[in-house]
Length: 352
Ligand code: MN
Ligand code: MN
Image (cartoon, rainbow, N blue to C red; front, side, top):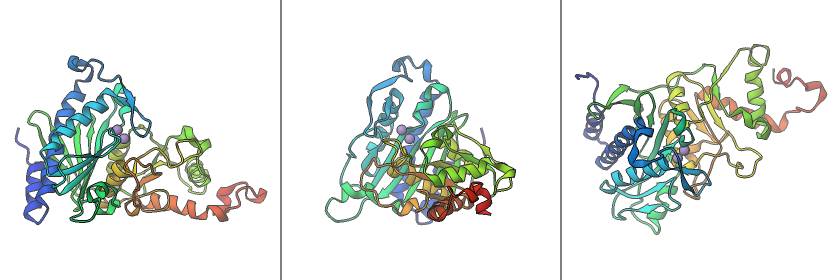
């Protein structure tokens, strides 16, 4: 098949020729090789007799307490193998309690969620792999241990693979965000959208609304105003979307705008939401900023947060910049808002 669009290999070669790091390009290619293998397995999921119940439980819990599925473990094994001969010194995976040192003399560190959205495996919805590539500091004590705990703004590259109707790679090498689509017949990823820009002014939001009663007031107020539609302070109607697979939500928002929220809430274990800073929020945030979007914990820029542990959670809001900034304003206005005052029972009026 003769495509006119460039392959991932060509894109990486051109980037290197323009001064990009060869080790980063090589690592992206290693990850793409892993994703290609994993995509083939996911595509035939239940047919894979070698894996038995591919969608069953792995029987262990991750450090974060999420139930591990067999495919989580398979994905971790696939990427572990593909990175073994790459220029990566240390890998921090959602599926491993501790970061794994491959070769301390190598220059890069990779944080990875080998399988995102794995609760959706048996529903045949899109799932994915999220990764961040960091430099290993050249010197200093514990440089390997702390390589994965740098703020997200230090990422050299980030991306996610999505295994859906199409398998695609959403990648940033810090020169825009680009989408490559896999042709399973040839095994090549081809550039299908260059320099993605997140559309603004759209009307979709994604949040698990069943947690409404647990949310902080600022989030409840923000969603209340969206749900009030044309008769509320926003003066227009919005649509809700919720796939419960972050890569699927992210891909949709890159395509047609909107916002995603996973806030903290009052339940035990949800004090910082559910998503992980190092291998979920950081790479997603870099992809969105490179696409003209924004990403915060509600107020603060994700990429400026300094992680203290590999698996720490963070409240996460990302999408179109106008919407993410509006959520921050709801947080900052919260202390001065007199929601309980009878005069302002219709808070929307108060806001106007
Ligand atoms: Mn995940
Ligand atoms: Mn995962």
